Image 1: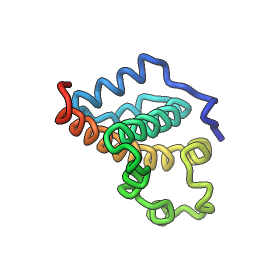
Image 2: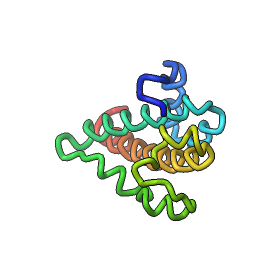
Image 3: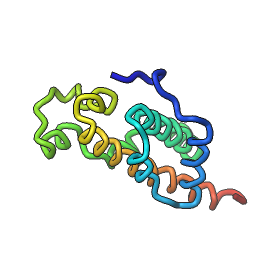
Length: 131
């Protein structure tokens, strides 16, 4: 299982992701070009970025539930995939090694949701300031 400290995106990769987001481009396609470790790093980076942008836009009212409520709940996702693992193990960091196709599919959905939220936060900030 990968840990947060096992893999890191290079600064240029993070800038590329942010640049694409600010241009309104889809970023989930990048997953297909990344190795397993980088996919996990991308997911972590987007979680951090979405949370940071959420706090900037909503202050103390921000909750990660704003993002996760738009994601398929893990038990439902597992059922759709025909997975019999315990729900606890349905994490990208775990399944990326045992079932990479399924993990990448789940991570791709999460990345799409987070990217949409980040785009929404960018639009909010564009309205509030000269961007």
